[in-house]
Image 1 (tube, rainbow, N blue to C red):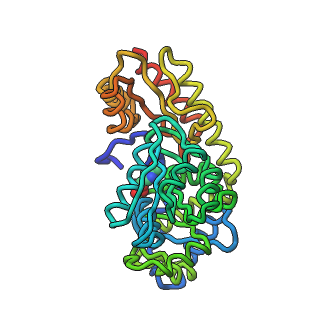
Image 2: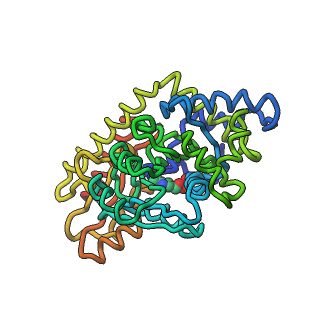
Image 3: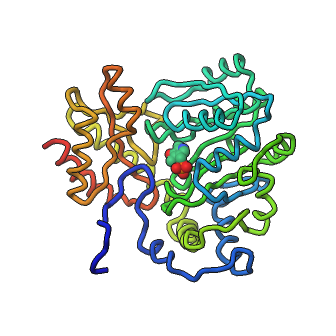
Length: 377
Ligand SMILES: *Cc1c(COP(=O)(O)O)cnc(C)c1O
């Protein structure tokens, strides 16, 4: 295109993220009717590939919501928390807090177990909170995008389930970059989206639901329309969405998921993300005065966070962002509210390196070279 209206910025933010040329091109594939047999040519492989990437137990069902990750998270709350019940949100950052807010906005009784930013929630703390709040449902963030912390959802869901509660997981920023641990955790609804580690544009919320969740939803009233998981099961059984999907994204998703499953390979994709995490953490450790924000053992395979040295401010990080833009990159100067809170507490702010989806180790290496130059000059 000679007069392209927008610059080609390389995105190293935490979603949306880089989209491969083949996936961009797939947006130009033929339009189709979403109740016609053409629909299943795209969406049957999409539903099946999502199940493979999730390593989904046979008795779980997959739902595609029109919307984004928070649509799936809202559907989980609307469909699975009864009006006289408590949902306990385990939060270690902005996205855990967001899910709690979604519950409150839907009129649910929602308790909050907050863990300090940069820390991971642990099973013993959840155990104590279970005794205090006696929740019927527990909601956990798999990968807290604001802090770069990946929680041990297997241990946390086990605590919830040992108390007879349903366990819900927000895996929006990790699904496609690491195992979902749905089978091992026994989680009852796992929520995710297209625009993060799956390397697609935003447009679908994705939900994986257990038999217990389907059973429970039958006892919950006022589940809404687009947020009613039971209403989605009929269309999903035919590889359809409840209402008209974004056809361009459907075509792109078909191409991308077939690539992930058949070409790159799911295990190789997870290994690539783990290697990029190690590269990004080593980069942070190599910068004088900078240190990783997330604790060892809980560092995310999709987003790395770095505490900056004394004297460097959130405002400085916004300047770094503009200098990186001039070099063709979109840098992430940290989650705004978190940096404000850190600075208000007399602490240093953080920045984030998104390395999810189809970003390659070579792309990351080139980015970190430029970032080192900009941060240190
Ligand atoms: C991005 C994100 C969300 C919000 O997802 P949307 O797709 O923007 O609705 C929720 N949780 C986490 C952990 C995220 O990273």
